[in-house]
Image (tube, rainbow, N blue to C red; front, side):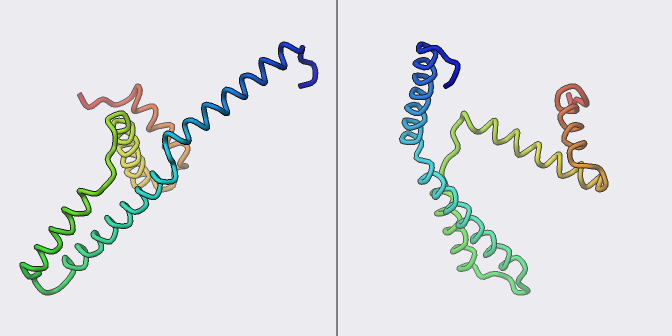
Length: 133
């Protein structure tokens, strides 16, 4: 803090102290570790169920009614225990997902084109370009 007046030093120290206090309160409120483990467990459960469905679908024999009932019960149980997405996050996550899909399709259509160029093109089309109406 060389070159700052005593008042300037106090202001800088106060700003950083306030920032640290805010981040500490946010960490306590959000509990990132617990949230992260909930989403990790949900992804693991859904991936396991998806693998079971894939195995049944790829099987040469027709699944029994007990197998179908068991998979349906597992599906209901897993889906009921998934962590929810708040209304505030939903629109942002949906927009991100749709952009990923569009970018993936653009890569398929233009395999040699640089990714940075496709991202700029996607941004342009999203703001000023093609409209679906």
